[in-house]
Image 1 (cartoon, one colour):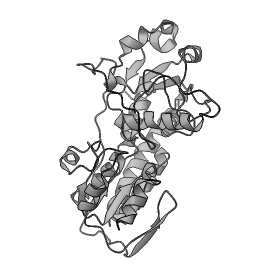
Image 2 (cartoon, one colour; image 1 turned 90 degrees about the horizontal axis):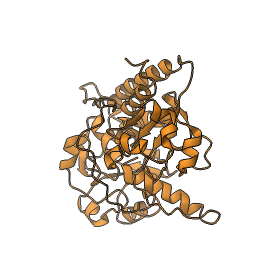
Image 3 (cartoon, one colour; image 1 turned 30 degrees about the vertical axis):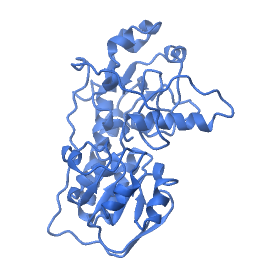
Image 4 (cartoon, helix red, strand yellow; image 1 turned 90 degrees about the vertical axis):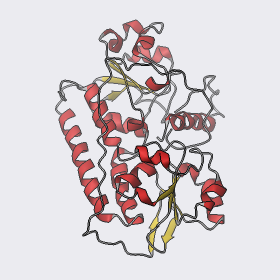
Length: 347
């Protein structure tokens, strides 16, 4: 979710789990959201200019600054994280390390970016996050570097629970895992961030803003008479978002009819024949920044008869992190998809 490598890594994990009853795929894709070490694939050259069909959506993530009337949280504070672990913070943290881009964005959105003393190499938003000390990649964390930063709170995700979290705890660090599974959970988890970071007022305001925007989208698309068939392409080997996945929830809330809604896994790999047979009316290219273009899609064998191709509705996603990263900018992603699926409703 977190970056493109996460999503393909998640696809790979699902396939590993199913290996006993299904052959492993020959293709090795690359995106992010929560799982094992992703395959290493060098991204191809991205287009020098974005196709004219790309929807233009400026990120509008709201940062809520601290207020003078903020009510301090009660510490010591004990909360249950998303791995089911009971975690206690003795005092409001002053030094925080984030192991995921989504967590980093949430900290900044609550006006607490100054607490961050370490982030991953993929933490690229807001721009100032790039200036923070790096503690490794999303799954390959430099444990000793984290320890050396002396954080009093480490924000992890479920992907870190089995390996990274125990090692950090052995070294005396307090670790809290946050892993929202849906758009609504992303918004709800801001309250948890608020408690952990002593930013309850900021979290309450941001939650209200994001929920209002989400409700505005779902209300508007609910007026549509039909739901267009949509194919979300994670990469050119045709991995996509299936039922129960984070991206599928986005598609549903945006009023789309996901052509992979009947898949048997959260991130299935479709065959070209299946995509053609499903005949999507809109194709969203989540791999645009990795070299795929509408022109390349249109040139694929047999794809000329797909409705989305015939009607020129192959739409590149210019910033996949708005969709693949479960952070506070997710409502930007929801609005982007809704505009792509229902341009007539969002003029």
